[in-house]
Image (cartoon, rainbow, N blue to C red; front, side, top):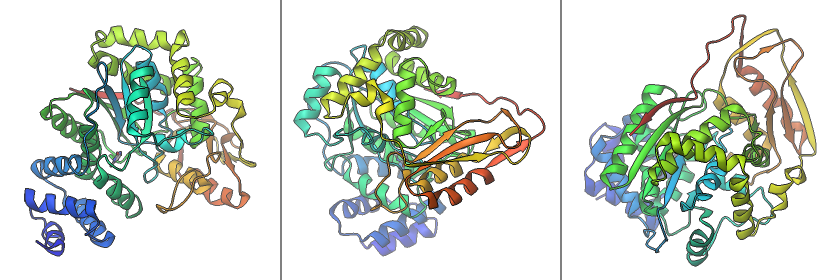
Length: 432
Ligand code: URA
């Protein structure tokens, strides 16, 4: 079998066999297929797509490319995974809520991908926080305090780690089969009992329409269920950034605010919806009952305490959570103001994510390092009336030269109208 022929067949729109897909993933994992052929394959899939059978084969091959999490955990384990968005810091809020009820959350998270942020990058904004734990440390922390959040370790779905990094820099992230295999391959390798998927929809997500997001959700839920996992997908809005903060430490601060009961309404609502489904799948009651549990965990401070406990256990400085004002701030800030009166009728959320990346909060190439203090604080959001000269957003960076291109991007991505736009839902659908 030759990789050249597999790329050519996919390029020409043919259906690949299970053996061809296994050959590809084996070669990605053992390094025998060079990056340029992997990238060409991803681009061919991007344009030609895959059948459900091919996508399932790809998912299982990714799952089997490394070890499975075979340790013994006490009790039910639940995970949630987002398809990626801008300002999406929900994991930092929902994982401690769920763990505060004794449900185990053994979370393997990703780094930023394309214009979207990643939980691992956000956690590394906390001084000392270790996103790599030994297997023994990981299991023992989950068993003792109920929550651990780590990056994808080498042993789990290593093929995805390689593919993820290459897709990120070759414009091949937003492909339905590649996303489904990436997410579900990892989730099945982690072997959780329950999986809640947060499938984003809109201008800041990889799936821009609700129809495409529903299709992706259906596909992933079916893959999860076929593998014997209790799986639910929520289709949530990403036509505007979630909350007001974009950028790593800014997002941790907003997540802490949310756990303190002072979070933005949209972020709080999506977190409560996700947490209630996670608790319900784990057997804690109906979704409605579990929503009340989630609200209580915020109101009585138990979710915040769980986050502090987790940060401490993973070597992070708990002061950052207890006193988020101690996060190091970027040296410079810059206001972006409205150049006309009107309602903000739409924002191109992907461009907002790219603006944050341009300030240093994300990567342009796989090797780039991140500026944790860089990012954007939105002052106005979709639906609000603004007047010429009013501040739309504050940009933060450690190099003033970065402000111009980021401000330009942000302004061009903000659409005004004289009419108040219709309100869009935050949770579009639930796929069970
Ligand atoms: N998150 C993942 O883990 N993989 C993708 O492909 C997209 C989002």
